[in-house]
Amino acid sequence: MSDFSTIVQRQREFFSTGATRETSFRIRRLKEFEQALKAREQELFDAIETDLRKSRYDTFVSELSLVYRELHFMMRNLTKWSGKQRVRTNLVNFPARSYLLPEPYGVTYIAGAWNYPYQLTLIPLIDALAAGNTAVVKPSELAPRTSSVMAQIINATFAPEYCIAVEGGAETAQAVLKERFDYIFFTGGTKIGKLVYEAAAKHLTPVTLELGGKNPAFVLPGCDIETCAKRIVWGKLLNAGQTCVAVDYLIVHSSVEEPLLAAMRKVLETHYPSDGTAENYMAIVNEKHVDRIAQLIDRTKLYYGGNVDRTNRFIQPTILQNVSWEDAVMKEEIFGPVLPVVRYEDLNDAMARVKRYPKPLSLYVFGPDGGEKERLFRELSFGGGSQNDAVMYFVNDHLPLGGVGASGMGAYHGFDGFRTFSHYKAIMEKPTWLEFWFLKVPPYAEWKLKLLRFLIERL
Image (tube, rainbow, N blue to C red; front, side, top):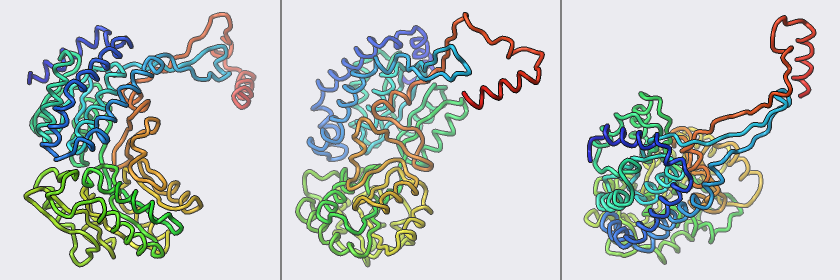
């Protein structure tokens, strides 16, 4: 089916029946989806290995396990979340009771990304369905085999008037976005995100934009060198650096730079490959991206790595030392396995430099508790982050994932995913046995004004 107007209209008609508002309906559909994914799990493993050379282990750990966790988290909690959420009522409205009542938006559109094609497509889909919406979902065409398998599973599991997957490139995305949706969720780059936002604005459709950014990691004096080196390297090289929350660059105090670099070299030599024939190391998505990343490697500042195998879409994990803020590698999000290291002496200067960049999706601080860590978390603007670790906050069910400014808007995961795809109606209920009518209607005497002022200031 490729008539997008018909697809959206059929979903709108189905949504209007109220079937998706029943929590029992939602839970059944999510259970069926989990069963369908597990029944074809081997196809999912094979597809992503074909597209991205991603190992079975990495696929389960960084993709499918997160999808299953989100399914379970939603099924366990959506009945509670779908009910009335009581809030306090001020005394001005006494007697009354107030609450928020969530309702699904309606017909949603979800555009996934290629770098984590399963979790970045299916988790927002799960959140949308758990909240009671219908969905049109488009996986990324840059991972074509993965897109095909996901679309097959989705379209075999759900009726098209409830949830349907559509495939295609930019033309398909543009055609879909001409339709009026009730909510749009996009994961990808800032350039396309702006186009999605522009299309949504024509219909005043609310959006979540999960974009990216140049994520800094500060390494402070007093850090645990060995542990920080391991966690920085892992947080940079997960998915061959093609991770929106990955460490993009290091800002390292001069007192710990050399021991940290030596420790990172040791980790790289022990655990990561030097050529494109190695297994268990993901490929760069295509040759265009290989060329783009390779151009960012300044051979005069090479500390470790630097090998490029265009045929195998491989770039060796690479560290650049003595990097300045003006270097080419500091001008854009790297989205690959190249780690620039910028040395700092004064934290104020380093923070001022970071503030000149667009607000990042993530920020990491490696170092002890204390004033410097607190300053970085409080004074710098970013979507989310962590102390003494990288990336892992992303998998906490109880923390939202989302950007700010150029790194995106809105958030999801866990309850925040349910909340993103829900409109909360504000409702107040009052009895009829008490009424302060005399204060509402003319004549508005001076004594009434004094009484109201007294009540408002004290209640």
